[in-house]
Image (cartoon, rainbow, N blue to C red; front, side, top):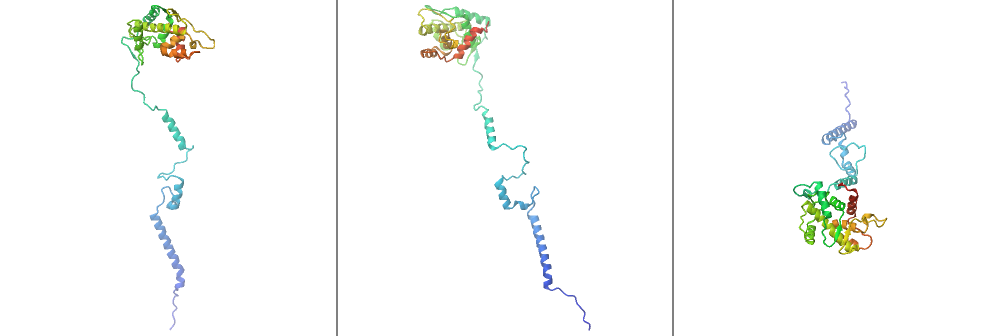
Length: 289
């Protein structure tokens, strides 16, 4: 019988390399599938491997995490926190800390409206010529009482200021009471002619008071407010120590305030030099003419 040759079957040593290759391929494919299914890719096109714990820790140390993509770089650098805070403080400082009052201005007006300019001027001139002293006389220039009235009210006969000053000469209630008592008068500051007379009487009382007590005036006597106060070329006329300046200053600031200034000795340091200067300028400019 003839022996029939048979195919040679590979032994275990021949099959080992092939088996390991197949197993390796299967294992690699399985791992790839698991990675693909369990760890999806990032939304910005990067793989999930970039979000490993080490990568996350590094990112947290350099910038604040954000759920949105980082913006494109600006053409100019953004202001720093310090700059932003300073700008905010500067802006807020421009607003008032206390809201403005909702009340209307306190200046009010008497009923009937202002008197005509011609009536005002006539009242002022008559008041300047009327003497209130019985044993003395004071020369009150027409332009002086007109200048004071212009300064005080702008010749508005019906105006009442916040401090209670009323009319042409801005007569206070206390002044009205004092003049009426001192000269035994009964003048009403709300009337045009009477208001002007109260102002003139106040100027006359101040003129005699300062003339006698500070400028060597005799009592009784005659006192003039015509002096231009030109004494020292190095001192402006409105700052000179003289009767006219003292009277103008005291009409607004009160005689006690001017007394303190004059009692100080040398050149007076009036508390209201701008007021004096303005009234004296009105004497020259005569805006009512």
